[in-house]
Amino acid sequence: MDDTALYLSLKLAFWTCVILFPLAIWFGRLLAWQKFPGKALVEALIALPLVLPPTVLGFYLLLSMGSNSALGQFYHALTGRHLVFTFDGLLLASVIFNLPFAIQPMQRAFEAIPVNIREAAWCCGLSRWQSLWRIEFPLAWPGAVSALALTFAHTLGEFGVVLMVGGNIEAETKTIAISIYDRVQAFDHQAAGTMSAFLLVFSLVSIGLVYRLSYRRRPHAG
Image (cartoon, rainbow, N blue to C red; front, side):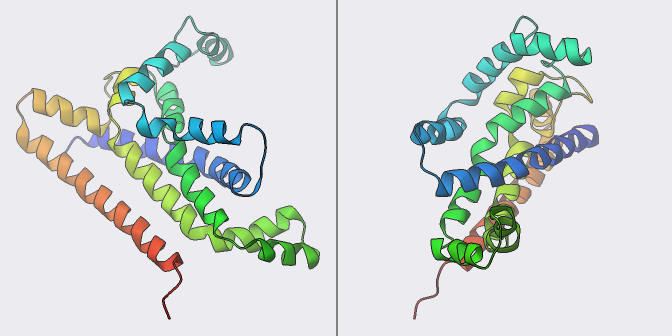
């Protein structure tokens, strides 16, 4: 097991979840209950990483965060650091390619809450903010857990975008998925198998948790 790569992957997954969690709540609630011009386009853009090849997404992220891009130059002027081939850029890319995994479960969870529950909360004198945290979010918590589980697991296993944006720099951008690729290239199948088995078990547990929560949210027959 490549402990350095595993630690970097866990660190990347953790901070991706920390950043995306409040965004997922806000966007998920907005998309679930608000109608506005261009809503379908916004939903399509959020879902785009699900169907776009990772190398294509990574290529455009590489261009948009490069040293010659406006974003790259702004970030360098602000921090003195570059975005591409650094953990900072890897984290930004991770947030972008995990948008659908974080937002869509929250959107579905908020959509499952009956409108009359929100209206009853308002009639009881709760503000929209109080209604969110005291009524809506406790009902939508399975969606929050699903979003966190999917985002964390997907971050650990992502390869294409990570390689395009971060490269393969030890202790900086070399994640466990990159390490597996390196071990296979070096014909170290035992190490590659150990790390692959870890990701397999972790992903299976995460998906199992998501499905279990999904079953609990469904109304029971009879």
